[in-house]
Image (cartoon, rainbow, N blue to C red; front, side, top):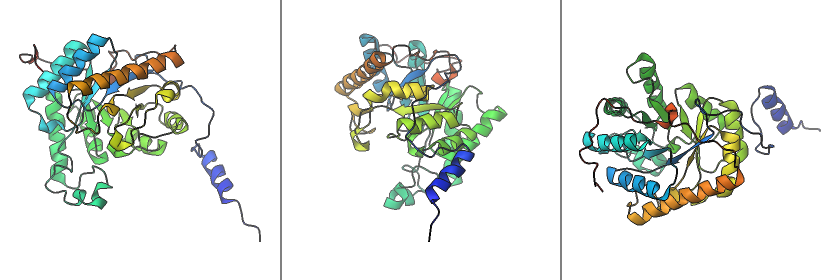
Length: 323
């Protein structure tokens, strides 16, 4: 008895609908750029306090190292209005964008006992009650009223609500919604779902192949991809410097997330040595990019995807000499 080749049939069906079926693809240069021009930006994660931000801004300037924007990842609700304003002011004065993570997330939520189990941890940071969703919306409103224009979202339902509020004018139209790596965007189809619900950029799963990133770009032409280049040791510790040029080539417009491998995990203490190591990792990564791909263009800083702060007034009384 002859059995049909199910794999070939699946490939025919997927091909008919324009759906990817393999990572073994010839490299095709992305035809896309950021809205105001440029192929890539540089994003440094886990800048979770004014002290850390001040240290790394000074180190970047002293060494002439390029960066586009920073990520605060512990959760904005852990920071006072004053500290957030100081962080926004420093970024605004120095020409950097910054995105803040929403909170509370399940690790802080009194109604998330399941999250603390092994099974619950596998579910990621999805919220399971309306109170937590309401608090996330409150944080988004607080952040934008303080002048923040970049918000990291951890929950698809929250993203859907925030996108609605942005479309209705309850949040500023120029607010950028960035999807956290904890949402596990691991395929073009997942990326498309987040885009359809209002995501401006998604942080991809850390170990995606060049082929998968290429197909993500093809299927989501208007979505910015944030691709980790070097990884916390607790998340695998690998470094993709030899992939960096191909990532820009196939994934543009793309943010290159660099510097994480300078510390064990996002909650490690930020010392002067960590800052120096982090800046060095960014410098080395960009050196590989320049050597392998000399015609790349950096994002225009006026592009809304940079998430530059927007202010009615600046609270800068703590900026001079603060560490």
